[in-house]
Amino acid sequence: MEELYFTIAGCSHYFGSDFMEKGMKVKLEKEPDNEYDKEAIQVKAKGLGKIGYVANSPFTVKGESMSAGRLYDKIGDKAKGKVIFVVDGGVVCRITDIEMNKPLKEMDKEL
Image (cartoon, rainbow, N blue to C red):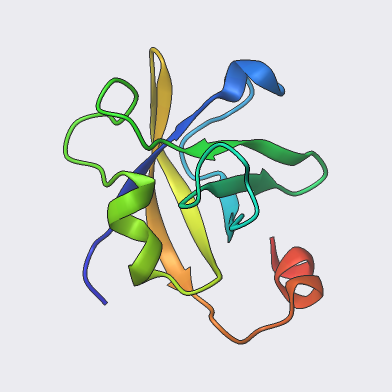
């Protein structure tokens, strides 16, 4: 699997990013019914639920990480990721596992 990186944006609308640290596991889940962005991918953390979204704007994507639009067709309906580093205005992560057919309940247990 090729190395895929993404930025978590919008954290301030949920729990902020102060609690996030390198190595933390996250779960990505497409949100096709999102009224604002048809390529929305929400990011969840165990015990907290939604913590933000995969950035989808040139103003929120950090470095060479992928926007939600570029990542959308590469991951299926859900995937797992891991925090690489926390920066001002976003959290950069790497995709660790793409699980297209595993039920969400099983992924929740593994986080």
